[in-house]
Length: 593
Image 1 (cartoon, rainbow, N blue to C red):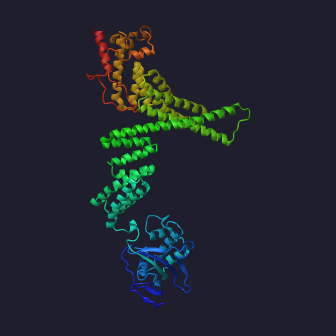
Image 2: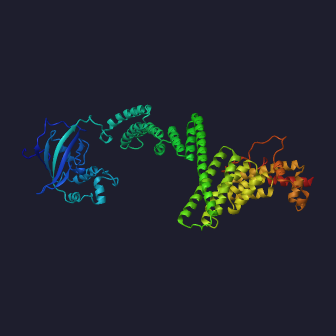
Image 3: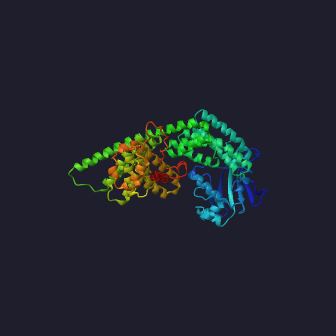
């Protein structure tokens, strides 16, 4: 044991307990030091505070620090760099050097227990967290925080690692070293992708992204260096997303693509990969939106986008039929069980189990309604209106069954009415496209009884009345549509113009002049119109309201989407007058002659 002596640092004394071997090592920045330590209080008993050999249940894992990497307890780097390999020494350190020891000790104790030393902490420095929580969780360390005092450290230097002899983590690298490491990680990831080792490749890309983001966090947002680093991140993020797609980690792709597209709105590949991920997790709306964005940003990819959209539609149809078969079998089994229970002479059971089964059957049928509606929507997009109407009718039949089950329950009845509304509107739109106008009027009459003044129902019924040449009813409904939303006035005028054209075609087919027609509507013979006008069946009206075969058939301008998009055409006649004014002028001219 050598005599105690002072180092060049004040407040530190050293006593060598066991000499080391070889000369004093060189400690360049980044050198890895592996050592055991024991911490003692400077009192008569020399109370042991920490011992790395017995920490973690006696596992004896040594501690490690890296030279020049700003370890929290800076004095330890000074102590260890004064030792030879294998040396054991005792150091007395004044309180000025040991103030942060409770924080270091807490972290090491948690690591030895297999816990995260940062778990539960707020985003602030270690001292800030201590002031926030008022305790380290260990009484002896809290005492050292309250009354800082000198400590004794007994250390044994086990290993001195060369800076290039181990894998250096990102926090240990300088800026230039990080920038030079990124291309290597990128190339290594590309090689792993060629070998279809996507998990390992993803880790390489992710590490490269973290290095660049660490450098970028030290730059001023908007500066040239900041923007250049952002552009370097893009291909790495895209490669990482591709690896996650191959590994079927679709939500991971969506999360990273969202972050990427928030900063780079014109990244076509980002939209494409996010669309693929959305399609894989059945987010149809989001997938179609991203695919359409791809086609908009790069028209050369339009054919690829169309193929992807067709594949998406086919997958959704296939999924629908699979789920329908599964739920249909369950519904059949549930119905059979109910019939058997009805035939039994036993008293009905009122326990909670029966209520649960009934609730499950109710939910399964409602789920089937949603599936039928989804399938009908897909068929409408494909313009297969006959098939779509069959789906909506089937769904409405199930809604009728559910409404009969919940009769008397106001809340459930209102919920089912909300389910019925879009189904009825979609069915009405299909009937319009199929030119079954009487059915459209019937559907919307029923709908308006429970939803008075509903905009779409009024508009669809007005179009059906116009197609049937029911002039008064059509004008009444079109007026209600215009009153509900004045911005549809040009569209209403266009429809009224078409109504006038249909009426003129019908009158020409019946060999009637405008004078005869107006006298029937507004003249003295209006009360006798039912006697003077021959009866016309619904089929005859449908035929008479259509253009004659010998006339050139106009373009199908009557087709208006279910969303009621405003058309730029229509409005007044060519000379600027409305249809009503034109009819009035024709009556006046007939009287003058």
